[in-house]
Image (cartoon, rainbow, N blue to C red; front, side):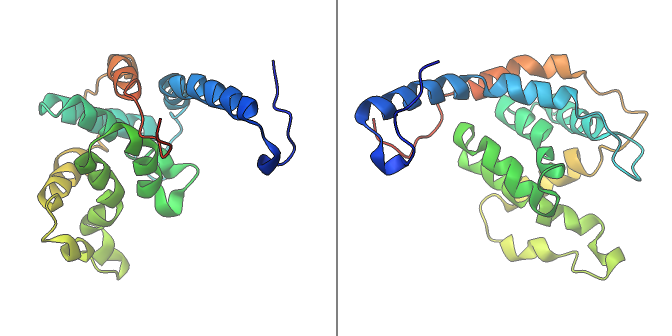
Length: 187
């Protein structure tokens, strides 16, 4: 495989950056397959919970799909906790960052804030403010995030719930991640 000529970015040529741009576009095109592969290995148990991380995600996404949510929102719901492994202290921001180039402002905001909104269900048991989400009460997507947490996230820890298998979601994962991502560079 061809490599760039530089060892410092400032020394790169136009040819170097055209090569990297081509390779990056090819890599980006494989994002959906990498996410699906990751999800297939996501079946470890959430310590203390009755279902695995994958099952929680499948339940939440199944609920969203069965509620006639948009494909974008179903995929976002499936991936809403994808940051739990690598970014447990800010998992919501991690998931939102992964999806941001492919989803609407509304879906991005719901993912970004769901960590704070889900505190409503448990923070008071730990001596924290369960109403932390109230600071967003006037935000245009506040009610949408409340709905996301209430209908799909907080209710998806049930070992008897019949969730759809991951393979049912793979086509829409591919569809969402086949969208042209936002680029900070103007073409």
